[in-house]
Length: 311
Image (cartoon, rainbow, N blue to C red; front, side, top):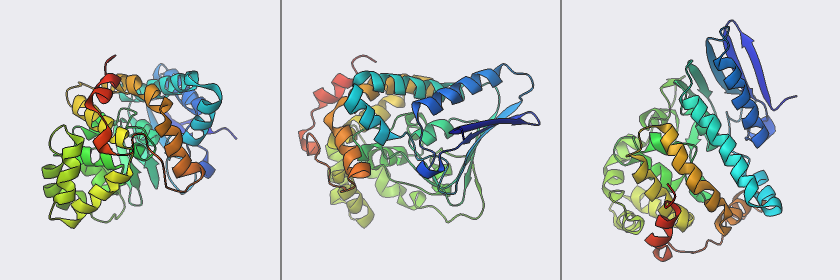
């Protein structure tokens, strides 16, 4: 069967992601098909609204199929990344600006590119079993697909915390962070609200190393544990993610954030950190990546700023 199923019932266009064995991970072809169908429905008077969901019970979407993207990059080079991100971000922008209501049904795992499809919808319903994350700093990337628009507008520094750590959150915290609108079902209370004190204190400012040191020295054990988490993330990704979310605050809409993402994404996946991060997390699964540079102390502000030069 098709990896994306499109149907129309009673004026509602249904988009169903259909790769359950891969938690509906997104390929270039899937994204292109979604973009084409949304464009057709936009001009179809018989379609009044759209609903997005996925097959299987593991989740709406685990994100882009980064393992396949890594393999294609190693084989065919830069053009693979240029095509993939151009197609993905165009679909995300189309959803963010769509003239008809789109309701996303989030359940189980919704991460990375899955949030690119769902977080910008006009209605985002999150099921009680949901786990949401932008885990890109774990694989040598940064939180992309326009989600830094929502994260940069989350209360206090919650969005910065989620962007740098790549940590996952449940249904109620997804609403608090601005990634969902309402919870369907009886979900456990979230953790972010009670952690706001040390999060807002430690994540202030534009210096990633200063943030890390404040976390490590804080009285709260959750803060100190978070410092250990960030130490395990790709140092260059952490620094780029902080710079990107600070810039996203001043960008007026999701489309503008996606334009920034496009400038950053290709050079980021061409760095050795991306291939290494995906290898450690998803290929060999040894969870022992060798980052370049290996410490946040060795990431220079000049190297980070150079990535944003064309934006």
